[in-house]
Image (cartoon, one colour):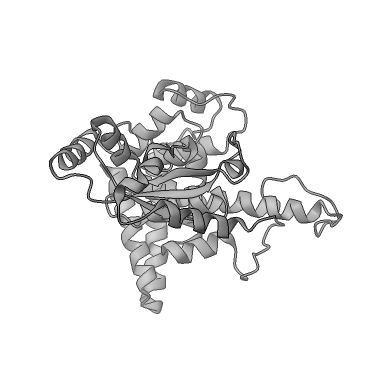
Length: 315
């Protein structure tokens, strides 16, 4: 069995050089996967129009980031097991504009062992950008947490399938899989680890996870409208939709969403916005007390983030 990493490296050296014409075959065969494309927060119409204007006037200044893998690894049809595939990781809007107007662009090659690592990279890349809304940042952090939990669940089941049992003595099929309170090998929980990485609280990460689950139960059009802010839905409603297990198909419009939440009593009878603001206010008070003792930059940044989120709820 040949070393796939060596194969990929040698193929890349053959495909890329200072002569951009040598990369034409890559640019013409870029694959766009919906599950990766949907990780990209949607641009507002005016933002897309400005990007298009810039590219038409000045060319595509930023290379598109492409994941070099194999069709076999992606589960795509192939002629040879080593047949390469080039998956778009960053630059979906630029790719759309350049393709539509037949404008050239450069590519920057990336390598990941699996699609899980590719998704993590994309999420971190988007979170590093400053033009995200509060909703978009929350969604991306929640996706990262949910992906980590799915990956941990898969790894645990792989171990248990070899004849081992969980601490209770039984093979578990629970979505959380890991016994409650159990931590990963680093000694901290997934929520705590991501909270430290993104400079928020572990509770925020878990709320983000419910928000992401809820948004993923909307169809892509409605989800993008919520993320862009063109359709206003209280975050508390989306989080509670994430806990619902009886939805058979994606929710396609706001009327259906509100009817479902009302019919299934997903939304409390009290005003969810007021309840949410009260919760945020209590968190701000507790964090302020903590900051008074710690003088921690991370605590201060979390206070600022929560304050901004509360302000957005009042708008």
